[in-house]
Image (cartoon, rainbow, N blue to C red; front, side):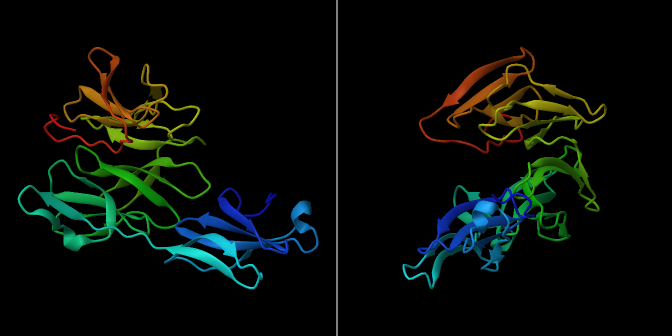
Length: 289
């Protein structure tokens, strides 16, 4: 019904006005989520020839769930601004602010512990800095939204998933020195949750949860060849262990962790629980998850 409109493929939460003259819906583009209206006073909706009109202006607020008043003169919407707080957990003092408690998430530290990378909330941009907050450098820009960054073993690059609303997430490499961004695979499918091999020569990644082509694949950075990890169909979110022997992934129902042993080339069910789990991370000595 929105064929040919530049904003297609990122709409949701539709609602008619009481007189049927307008159709209100949410449209997401980059980090902006706004309410748009589509006129049907002359049957344009059925003909597919009208152009939607934007009603709200965000960010900083993300607008959603338009509800017209009964008299049709006003529209109620929800406005949301996501915030985060970066904290360090200490067994004695519990939660302590880290980097002044900045609003970020999806943090990862370099192998030498000198650098940190994170995604800002709500902007969704990728940054890196030293662990004391100095030498900050912004690595990505809107409308790209960065997801789950991971430092390379040598600390020179960061791999992450990135995308825009309405488009598949892709895997990118970015230089930690100057912010040069490189897309790794020229395909139209989603690529999520990249994780490095200990030697920095390969990257394992998954697909979106519940995707038809869900599996774990490995990209060789030297040959640029991609191979499917045997027996990985239906699982996602891979995490390699620093010692290189194991890879952990999440089952399709998000309630099970499975373990791949590179020596035996076999998967085993490892942890199962009644509630959802996700975002696994290994300790640097490979003893804990």
